[in-house]
Image (cartoon, rainbow, N blue to C red; front, side, top):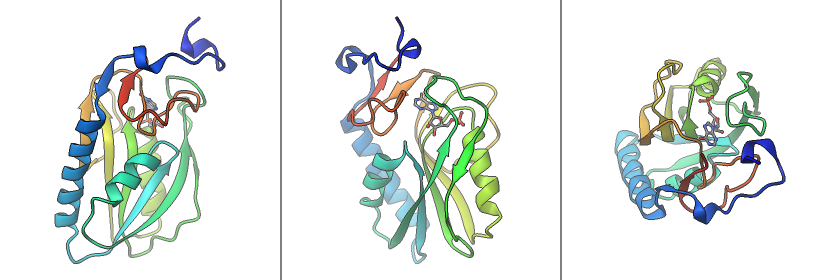
Length: 181
Ligand code: IMP
């Protein structure tokens, strides 16, 4: 039985291919932190983490910033325990980002649909600036055209878990990025 067909089955994650090691992630997050700090020098940044997947990435990235920042979250869901997007994005938040310098922190860009919804939604609050930082971006042909300013790693079109990313709420605690397929 495949992982997709049973919510109960837990795969031995140590038997799965490591796509990005925890050391590689650490180095890249440090680089992103330096780059973002330089770009936002003299400004106060508002990091908006996309729950649930971005919680570990945001926590590590925020600690690599050398500029002041505020941290808040919104919740987005589109996968509903499956490995392909349901195509419907649900957003939940209570944010006021008017005239703020906003950096949306996302775990992974797949079709780009989630970020497209988030950008359209947050834009209505008239932030001073609105940019995206994603740990991973999948190399797929029909992506929604969303401008992602900071990308940790471009990856091939595989289903990945770990470092906050899940399948049916499992494997978020894994310290590296592993391929589940
Ligand atoms: P998109 O709307 O297709 O770009 O999907 C974005 C969201 O889907 C991400 O925030 C993740 O929560 C989830 N997602 C997409 N690909 C993967 C994956 O390979 N593993 C785990 N979650 C994924």
